[in-house]
Length: 195
Image (tube, rainbow, N blue to C red; front, side, top):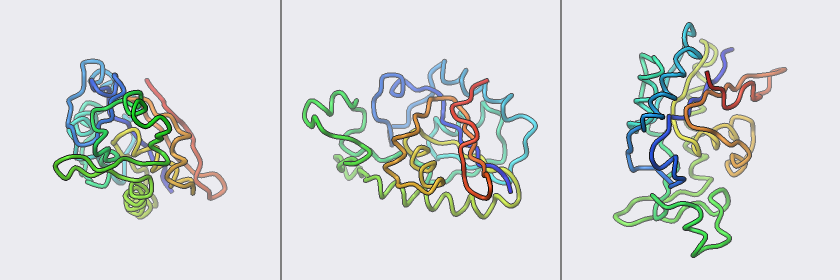
């Protein structure tokens, strides 16, 4: 049975400033490109039964710079849809909604039909990804390249927790995490690893 490796894309302007970024397809900053390239030694020499990336350019570019080949894009790996909060920081949201919490309240739909998502909706996408992962793990390690909030929800679901409990796992840009098993149960083996 293989391990599940998670890679959060490298830094973007909005991840640096704390702005919620889902469908806005920002490129990596210079630092983000350096972070992505620095992951190559951590992943070198490993073979993967399956490598999936979010379809967004920041994840695809991170995979390329980390030296990953044979990747498939999976729309379910898209970041949490922030709807009306796209491009807005939590501090700015709290000016109008002081008690708002993404992990319990989700994000309301935005203009032009841009969706917002609840934690449960993100959890359903994570569960679909985990179904693909589970099918591939008997063949070896699986690697996912995606986004901070989504990967936190996916981690919670892999560990048997609710989507909202993804709040417990702070995830830095340009890092690798490894979920393994102990006595047949999923566990966190490494978190926020950098070269």
